Image 1 (spheres, rainbow, N blue to C red):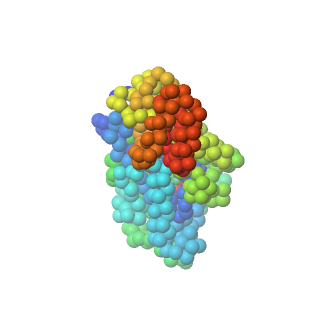
Image 2: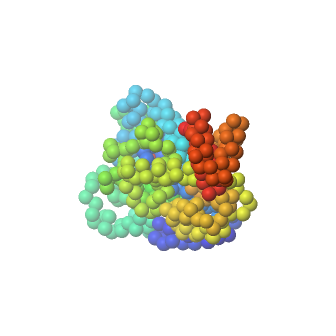
Image 3: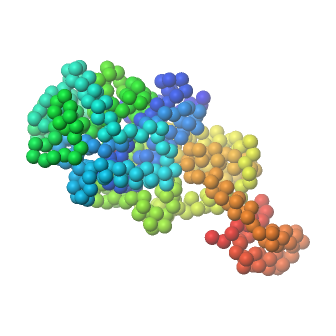
Length: 465
Ligand code: AMP
Ligand code: ZN
């Protein structure tokens, strides 16, 4: 097994990755809050996580990937106040909260399909796991970490010695600097495990519990469902960097309190997509969806290419010029497939080594793309060897290169006899250096709806688009 290094937020270091259970990697991804369309910033994070999973598989590990769907409990204010995002949107759209959640879950799943992101093995919805979440809260309560206020059951973060370790939160500073109204909370970092339904308003999503009617806090679903499907500890937990100080910090605290064990070995976080230096956000009002890009004529995989061209731990500024460049590169890549032949069992060894080195160095996709281009341009291996390596690389890159190659081949196989005859005659003319005749035949082929190109591998024919 080759050495794979990943940057672990927990230690702030690149570490050699080893799974906890033989060859199997158990990985949990925080999924979307389904109250609106995903924006391309959110999708950047899911592309990074997809690359992570593909790199693990490329290295020969079997991955079990679990992802949640937050359809309840994520409030407009991360400090446990405000309205439930799903219920708020339901009110605005005059739909039920259940309809909103179902609609945006479906939209999200369509987006990730268009981006060729592999589906997790388990999708788990918060609302399908209410009883499990109540059980986790009971465990936390029994271990002595909870207290009750007038609006819910809270986690007392002062009871955990290393609360905030992931985010390097300094609890003394936090206490000293707490100017925000804490309400009945004992510490500024305390968070809700269970919120009571408001007295004056009827919620659409609410459940009975040992503490009163209400709904789970946002973080408890991830501790509960990751434990249920992956056990504790599991190998890798990932998400966007905004999850470090609150959501993931609180997940770690809950799992520790409930299970008496650390939650995960590796924590990986993707940097933001920004626009004009500002984070793209659903509430910031600067959000662009994948559909917007498609409506403007971009291929969804051009966005994937755009994302791969930056390292996941670097901020990425979105610009239309940048996306144009990515679309152009993707078109060139697809064009270059026409120069390749059917893959053989042997690839371009030295480039495969370089590629592996790049992706195993904390998922260095920009470097991996550079190696791919270097290989395509190189004269040191044959078109059939290049095809072998390229399709292998695409197991990580996910740009659907094999499908495109097949599409091209099918088109070529369907070339009418008349064109094939003309090609033969033209080849003969070229061999005889009858350039005028060769050009005339090319024009004739062109008028019949096909384009012929002369390449080092000979004549290449394709239908006009
Ligand atoms: P949400 O649906 O708000 O829970 O977010 C889904 C995922 O998108 C989370 O992993 C966030 O960390 C991530 N995310 C949110 N905004 C951005 C952004 N501008 N760039 C990259 N990832 C983001
Ligand atoms: Zn989570």
